[in-house]
Amino acid sequence: MAASGGTPAREDTECILEPLSLPESPGGVAAVEGSPYVPCIFCKECYVLAEQDQLLKHMIIEHKLVIADMKLVADFRRYILYWKKRFAEQPITDFCSVIRTNSEAPLEEQDNYFLLCDVLPEDRLLREQLQQKRLREILEQQQRERYDTSFRSMCMFCDQEFTGNRSVLLNHMAREHAFNIGLPDNIVKCNEFLALLQEKLDNLQCLYCEKVFRDKNTLKDHMRKKQHRRINAKNKEYDKFYIINYLEFGKSWEEVQSEDDRELLDNLEEDWSDWEEHPVCAVCLFCEQQADTTEKLYLHMQKSHGFDFPKIKSEHGLNFYQQVKLVNFIRREIHHCRCYNCQEKFQSKGVLISHMEETKHITFLPARSTWDQPQYYFPTYENDTLLCTLSDSEDLITEDKSEDVPVVSEDISNLKALKQSSVLNQLLCEENKSQEKF
Image (cartoon, rainbow, N blue to C red; front, side):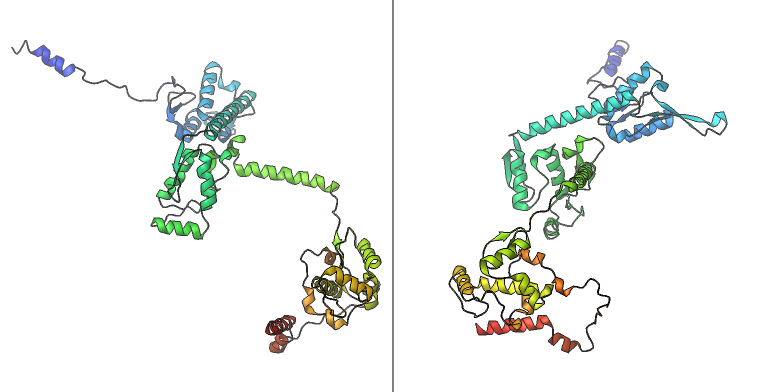
């Protein structure tokens, strides 16, 4: 029995009860398109796609190959596979520049490095093709997301659920919670983007300053009070979710935008030569008539109303500030439908102007103390263009004046007396008196 039972016992130990698996070694170059590994261009070493820097380091140290501007390569894996195939067909010196290090050292201590860059037309064409392919893929994905009606997600701030199109949720967060991550049509990989933001909030991390807080309420108060309901534009983690970052691979949205701004500034500099100043369009003191120059406006006031502003300015020797006060005084009196000479009030501006023209009250000014007041430094109308065109009387300006005008500083030895004589203090007293009357 022992001898006869030996064979079955051996068969029991050698039987296979479950499927076997070969070691998941990435060795070998028979890497298919869907593989998560990227092979070395020269040997059987492979690296995970996320560890591309390790592969580049390996090729520099072990094979003396330097690839320039890898950040400008849109598809790292396809790029490496392409050149692995080409280097197997032709010598590396047909494609790469040779860089000799330690050229003055003995021959045995010298090293030759090989530089692969877009100076080579074939390499430049490959990079452009990969970029165009990546851009097409991203635009196709964005188009699918734009018209996708199966979208379903919760609002990150009020737990309200939204279904249908992604724009419904994004517009809700922008309108109701002042959280704006951009226009829906400028965003790609929206589900992944929202999941990343939600994960940060779940980890009690502020989306803008990225500080971590002890509880959810503290985080919410912080984001609300600091106005941090927005993402940090400097965080490169968000770049892949915006279409602008795929337009020119290797350039961030800031670089693309700065180039656009420079082009705009260049165009503006060119356009300055054709720039024409818009007319002034100042308004008459007594009616709604407008003129594109002060000369036309003064002529209108003289012929239509009998008010000769240049003559009054010259006869009274009005400087710039006195002209400002006079204009503001007349504007205010006309606005209140009150004659600035006899102080009579009327029902409408038209009746007032008729009265002033008939009685000639419009042609001369009241006593200087009536209108030469500090309160009339302030415009009656904030958009009064006439004030911007006033100038000192030419009779008061002497170009050949050689005598310097001394500037006397205020005496601040008695601050109490200075405050009591202040213009602002006078205005406050007048305001208080007018309020007491009412």
